[in-house]
Length: 594
Picture 1 (cartoon, rainbow, N blue to C red):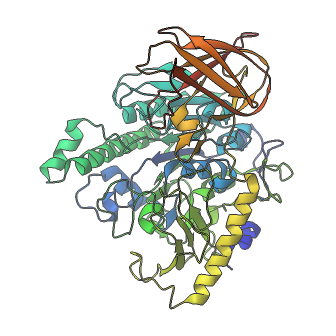
Picture 2: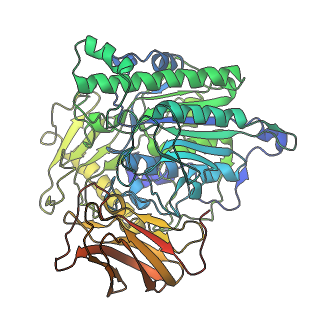
Picture 3: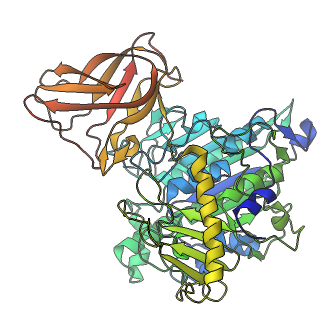
């Protein structure tokens, strides 16, 4: 059986929901026996960035041992870039359903109505914490604390030092702890692992419910750029003759490896190792050219080098170690797998918003494979696509991955926003069993196979399109949950033709709002403009001034704000700086952020 429709038929869960969760295991005593979960997700660490995959230069002893003694998903897939992978992981659904389109410029905002693994496990009695990179929305209702995480220590945007959180550094980074700005001391990866370990240590036994299980999501921002790491980690690789870039990346990965080993050791010392499912994988292929175990392509490509990830799992109490599973699996499978292992079943009658025809989870539980309970496994096809722009185009930078054969569409076109895919599509076909490096295109030799994969892809694309029609998440203004709100131009504004055209917002309450715009080096007298509901208003800004008040009605739509120095036209700013960012504060009622 192959094809998208069959995938839905085989999904473990008929529908997502957060209301009326039921558990297969009931009672306080049984709850204490549910496994804990730890997911470590690294950023831009490719399939070849571990020693166990034949890299003789990198030092990853803890990960190599973890892989050898655990279960390796040898054909585990992610999206070609980071935010899409994170949305799929959190929801168990293809990210196009969630409002996430790509990584910035309005494309990385997951709708607050999406139901996450953190929400589902929290409702089932788990303590939930995130430590690292979120990248699914920095404003209410899209923040981690809005999406089921009781404890959060994260950086904003897609990376430390990116707008709106710059200047910033991997050393003593500015972070957000449960929504509040903090500046801990230390290297970012060390800080995130320290916080995760402290959270685990705090999950003490409670007399009324016994030991409360925990879900720790530890998505590092390393080894993503900027490649900041102590010379103590990078210098040994320079001594091996590696270039500066690779030396820095490998140094960052070695630091991750050390922290991963420290995490495992602490679980062991706390007596939690046998009761904890630990999962490690990368979010996409490597950003830079380096060893990638013979796989073609890298980050942003839908060749294997861009979407195939190293993925290792252990549950010493239940998983037989020393195994490799060669069936295809993906980020969308993590949520249903964890729910299955925890014995948690969401109410089948509560569908996620925006689901056309009520699709269930796109992923399926891997628990039978991991537990060794099922020798046979149905064939299926997985789908991947991502490119710049807020209107995804059919076939562009896509892939349909089956157990053996794979279709690739318009490879390497991630950044081509003006690509025309309206004619006969450019499609390639590969036999991954015989050609994992995707060197021989079989499209001309196997037209029937290509046609079948193409039909499945087209059905998938139509289905994910109908979910939300690629509408990103909406930022709320005037909410009691967040006030003031930072509208980041580069990360969150709606970009068309390479330029920002305002932010998609919902103004919960009409009234007076103060707009404070970041003008950069501009200090001359100017006017501050706000466009809302088809009406433009402006206020004069004296020399050195950057704030003004506006009366705005409630509603949903696109709001735009900009400044222009007196006597000059508006200058459209489209780069990655913070110039043009706007803080919006609701004044009537003085709403207080939570």
